[in-house]
Length: 358
Image (tube, rainbow, N blue to C red):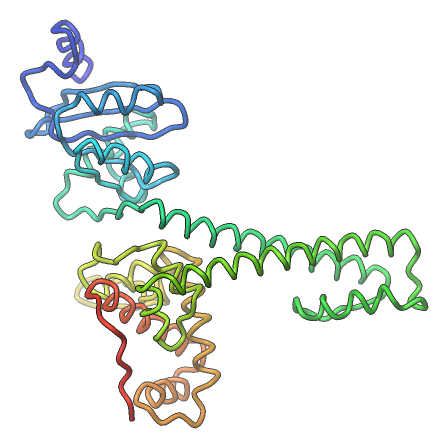
């Protein structure tokens, strides 16, 4: 049916000269080719087209204003900004919500049709389009995270190699910093000259990674100091420059969520639910959403728990009681959930954090 419609449109001179106006387009993104499927207000297919990268913006510039839906994937925020500047309404959808609408075998046109279909659902959840500043800030976090993984891998390699020579180095980055120079200076540990040379090279690579992490941390602190919303988030116990900037980079002002409970759920900090026959069953946390941000929030909560002894404010008393009843791990997740809700309130409503005193 779609091919017949396009054939009729091509006979009229252009696939956009049809008497039926395009209301919504599903766009399957790629590196060099982009596949589009469009429908009118009744849901009848009126467009089926493949475009090269250089043709995309020119084609949408000549298209009457409509709704353009894409999966939230690599490059989607760039195209959302560029196409949105042409006047079109942009809808980004998480890929997991598009998959149920794919009919038949997977191909680019079926994916575009599924995106178009999913965007037409009244209860569909959409992803907010990131600004360039948000993407820059997110890139800093991603780069830092990558370097941390490289440093951890290198530290494990150093410990493993030394273990083959009967030298054991305790776990922890600080132990590697302290012990490796001592091992190199010890002339009685049985290490050969060639291995000492290689060990010194690995230590130098380790120090280079350390310096890169410090540079990224400094850049994050500079953004934190210059960003008013980040400073407001930093007033929350357990929230520092890394968490505050990561939240801004990922969610912006948070207004895509209707309340703090939905925001916490998007981070995977709420229990998974399995309910049938009016018999609710709550399981462990869902672990959905951004794993990096969820991890930061939980680690921030752990730092608060380590320092609650002797405090008598309302929040600390609640946390002390929770630790006594459920343990530190569950208390850390509960505090991370609470902090996530507070973060949403500060961002979406522009409020200032006001802790309740004893």
